Amino acid sequence: MAKREFLGGFELLVLLALIRLGDEAYGVPISEAIEESSGKEVALGSVYITLERLEQKGFVSSRLGEPTAERGGRAKTYFRITARGLREVRQARRTLMNLWQGVPQLQGGAV
Amino acid sequence: MRGTSPPRLAAWLFERLASGPNRESLGGDLAEQYRRGRSSAWYWRQVLMALWASTTQDIAHHKLTAIRAVVVSWMFLIPWIFFTGWLYGSTKFWVMETLIRGSVRWHDFWVIYAAPLLITWCLGSALIGWVVARLEPDCRAGMLFVCAVSQLLFAIQWGAPAWRLANAGLPFFASFPVMVNLAAVFFMMPVSLWLGGLLAARRRPSTDTSGPLRAT
Image 1 (cartoon, helix red, strand yellow):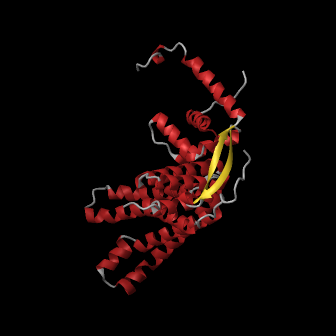
Image 2 (cartoon, helix red, strand yellow):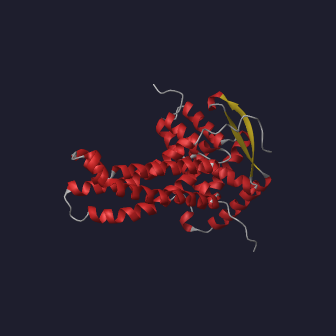
Image 3 (cartoon, helix red, strand yellow):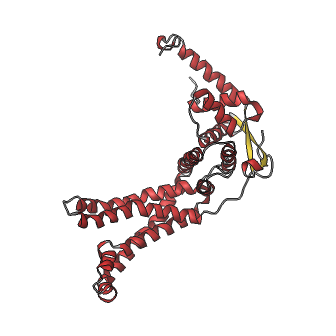
């Protein structure tokens, strides 16, 4: 069996947020998307570290925007998922779905 | 009423200690969120979490640099501790006879609390922080952290006998100076190291002002 690295839980959340946000994804909307769906506060620093790691793996690409006064003269870094990243998310989904099936504790909404 | 500028100290710490290729963008995101109404507590929390993340990333990605920083800090710390200890010990009686001359307050300061020795150790620690921050400008937080942690070895070596002494059933007036000594080596020396590092660290110039740099 081929040896490959699995996506971490937070990496998967970040990639899913990137897919939802499209080309306008940068730190703030990414963290807000994860916060809204998880109900937990997200550390922006962790989002950026995860994005850097995903970029090193080739799952994400980035470009710099223009600096704005609202941000104290700092530019946004926009991120988007690459074709390789998208394949990885699909693979992660398949793996999760396979594991999900047939587990009685996870059927329905009851805990 | 809350201003639009984020808490100054938190922003100052972030500017001087945060690292990583997206440091400027992260700083911009924090400023943007604060302007949109996030609280000062939220800003502080985010800065501290970002700095902790920077610290761990610095250490993970610069292991050899971390070893070098620890070696440099100990190359300075050991001679400094020995020299100041020798100087303090060899001048103590001369100071008591010529400068203190029966003043109880100065005697306590100089002899009981060994304050000059502790102050020079803290100054030495601050200088180490300054040197390390200057040597490793791209990963200051991580390098200062490993140096501060490595200094705990000295603190334990110095502090363990002092701790036993403080817990030997001595009356409060006798054990209190020992506790002050312990606080100095365990707390004030690492704090001095961080302060030295922060003073050495200039605000890094923005790297995000020239439009797209990375390919999409």
